[in-house]
Amino acid sequence: MICHVMRQIHLDLPDRSNNLNNSEADRRAGDRWFAPGGRYGAVALQIRHPGNGSPPTAARAGATAFVRSAFTLPELLVVIGIIAILIALLLPALSKARSSGQAVSCLSNLRQIMMGFHVYAADNKQRLPDPAATEQSWESLLRPYLRAREAYHCASDGGLFDNLRSSYDWRDTPDAATTVAGKLLIEIRRPDAVFVFDALPEWHGKGKINSAQADGSAQTMGYQDCLKDLDRPVNAP
Ligand SMILES: [Zn+2]
Image: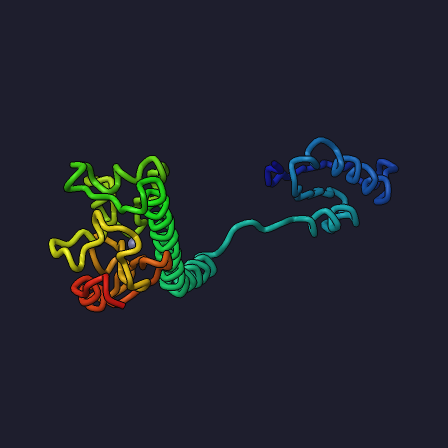
């Protein structure tokens, strides 16, 4: 890394009476200019000429290489102000992009979970998990088919996953007409029936909830619409 060190080289040149003219002084000054100090960055070259007050040509050329590296206070305040305005403009957009990314990730999880349910049913004579009969949670029953721990984790979940190891709930209702727990796949006649969903609403917007349907699709829907669907029987189209 080039270190910007300002160096001043003072050359005491002999007077004109020493048979050393300006050209010779310039040459020597040039030699000093490219000497070791050059690799450290800008060098301010100042030649003090005892004969007359005006510096030789090389000294003037060296002086043009002088690089001012400091900001004045007003300049610094303007830069800080511009940075603050840019941050204020960008933050809402970044927050929205982050929120959208989390919602997309959640919908992907829900589709994977639905696939897990279908593979489980394929291995169990088309019957869906029955936590009450097996005394295991639906997440545990799906684990052999969906091993990725993060598949049960909604990125917008603020703490449920940390305690329960799952951000989601499924259609295991107490009503035999509306539940899917322990049912045969063929008994679910509504392909749009809500099947698995965020355990809590509003992780992806006010009044919204992410859910996956019996046909394997996933969507962000109104929380009230989700509750209404859970009250509808699944065996009637
Ligand atoms: Zn979610």
